[in-house]
Image 1 (tube, one colour):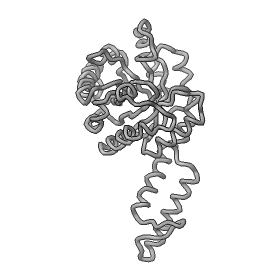
Image 2: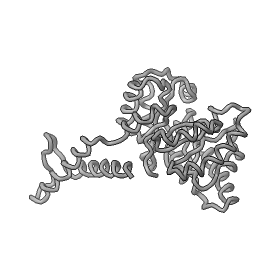
Image 3: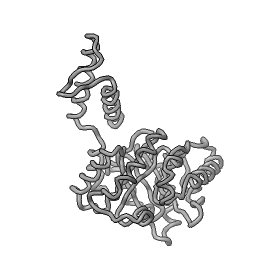
Image 4: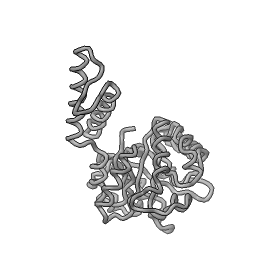
Length: 291
């Protein structure tokens, strides 16, 4: 999966907002059929989202949809309305465990088969919002349809209620939860996604929080407002200074190797091939984000 720094939520019943969202700069959109849509607007939201997926894809916009779930299962009618070319994947809320991913996988396979699509094409990103899902993060991340898992820690939201933590701007109460999501995702070869910063007008708070999540190993995060996208994208992008530093590191080791050495002091630090592997990965990420 190509990295996504910013996933911007857009209510599925707001057609004009969806159209405007292509100018937000978000790497991917999440057209929401769930919490941001009132019950009486669910059917209309399905129609709008179904119509706009192809339009967004034609603009070069990566598109995901968050589907509804009842107390016992996810909404098959949502899937039948949205599964199509141009849809990269879906988000599923509050999975209890890997069983829910398997259930969604079967429903997606049915929808893909009906529409003559490649089975397995539609990706599934689970939001780890229950205690059991957090405990079974690795098992969830292992599913072939899952390219990423979300270890979001919004204030007073589902995961806070499920785990009983009291949110703080510093985030010390959720460090273990987020690190667990990072480790599970990386161990499964998938991407860990963070967020959500609910105080959308507090841009400095967002900058600190997103940089802290990046430092933990998150690859991107969920975003609630277009004004937050640029800050999140910046937090998850290598800076020009970092790129120059890592290019210099690679050059320094190559020169040392030409002299028969396997390590060198670079910018006051001891480096060897392990450090250069990291440098090359960061440079490759930067190039990928530019394309």
